[in-house]
Amino acid sequence: MRDFSTLAASFRMQIAKQWSIRCGLSPALAIEQVVNEAVCVGLLNEPRILPGNTFTDWASTGKSPAWAAQAMLNLLLKSGWVPGTESEWAGVAAIQVRSGKSLPDEGFVEKLCKLSPALDRLTAAGWIHAALLENEIFVYEKKAGPKR
Image 1 (cartoon, rainbow, N blue to C red):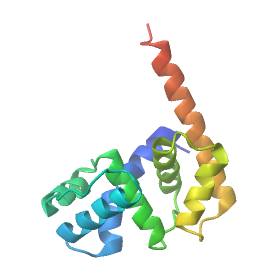
Image 2 (cartoon, helix red, strand yellow):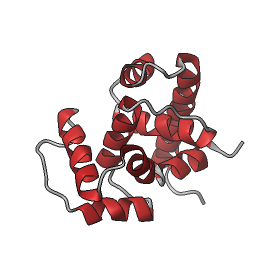
Image 3 (tube, rainbow, N blue to C red):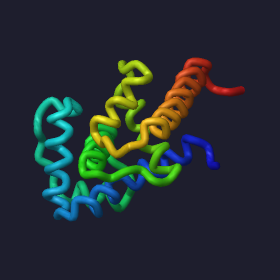
Image 4 (tube, rainbow, N blue to C red):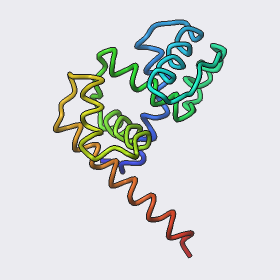
């Protein structure tokens, strides 16, 4: 198995493409849904109008803002999508952990399972645990400063 960060980054780069395929909407409507979801769950304070080519850029480059990645993940899970690969599970867990730092550990699993009751709780818990450990290592290394 590749390391967690590599797996998570691989999914993160594919999330807009995943949502594009899943929703089947034009880029303008797809990004409108992403923005609406972000506002609805408090990732954005107010709606913004973004052009469809912004969504197209996200899908083609694999680079989207963190708020958009979380909103797209929510939309994917609400639509019935279930992660099936290690990369997808790592990405789902990493996005959840990075967006909900104030949750207790079990809160991440609860949040995921509310979005998609079809998720396997035990599998979700294992990947969330891995994401939390990865986050702790990242914070520790950041505080330790550059390696000499």
